[in-house]
Length: 230
Image (cartoon, rainbow, N blue to C red; front, side, top):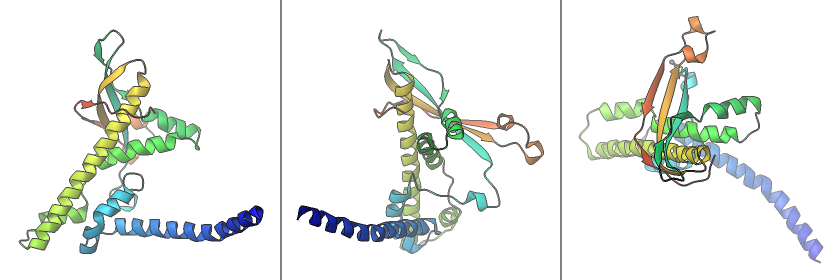
């Protein structure tokens, strides 16, 4: 009797599973479509829910199809302030934690390095995200109506929250990297440096990436956040 009940349950699950999977796929792509639409009154009402679902791991941009292709590479470097076994505090030099992951991805396509790199890249993009063109025009256009002021305030709040979430993710990634780089020391603070390498012009396309112009954005020291090591 128990076997018959188990068989019936198994057949029921086999029938239900495709419908559940289809529903999840439809919901995901529906939310993605709503997330990518320009700012409008309907989107403003649910934008916090959309951002909460999409960011950081499902966030998408269409720069590739724009008139100005973003031909640049970003690397995340971390510096750690740690206390050793003798109680001495020292600041370690910056270490590039992005390059090893990408080199590992190139050698082995099926590797956790892809997800780790995506966490870094998502945090960097969110913390340095450029303003949406529609949002910029919304903020620049003068308007005295109360609904308009509310829309502008909501856009400003969302931009601030997005950048704060991105930087928080970067600090957590840096903390995990410091714990992994210096396992025998007690990490006190972490600091990040975002390096942006602009690709050489097309006339110099055969030159290595490092020949492009490089710029840096350094953060202040932030308290170490205990988390799992990378």
